[in-house]
Length: 220
Image: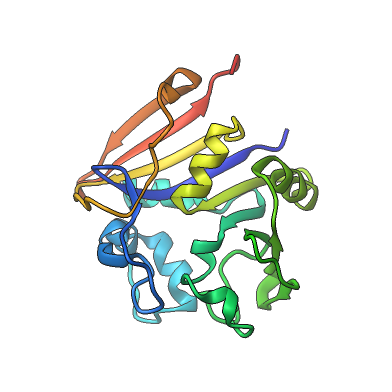
């Protein structure tokens, strides 16, 4: 049965998935790249970064093993408006995302926005579709596109929180990074007792991050 999965979503010690203010020059606000430095050091990133950074190099290890789980078995992705672009992207008819002509998704991608626009077909099999929909409605659409494969939630924190509140997430992999941001968009707000619905495992690695995996209980 198709699952809804989250992989490689980084949060700070105080639970923020991004800093502020976000802009074209600073996609993660004052957090900069600190939330994702653990991933930049992996062999997985070396493969992904072919689209962006020809000089990237990565290593194997526990962080890489978790990072590699991002891709297999994914047939569609859902993301929020703030992941697709900076706060003003809806006013730019030419904006096609951060990732260049060949984005790394290679599946249909459903962007949740209150200002939908026509779909954008990119190189490599990625097509961006823009939906003004509830989490359940968006997931139904994405599952139709994914067929027997799984749907990945790409973030940001607000979208993930909304799907968790709706009880729609089967598997979640978070990476807790040892920094304090103090402000931004927090994941955990309103999710009291979330742990009751999931089996949780934690693995700390030499990079200083802790990988948290949440697998939905069979009875939840």
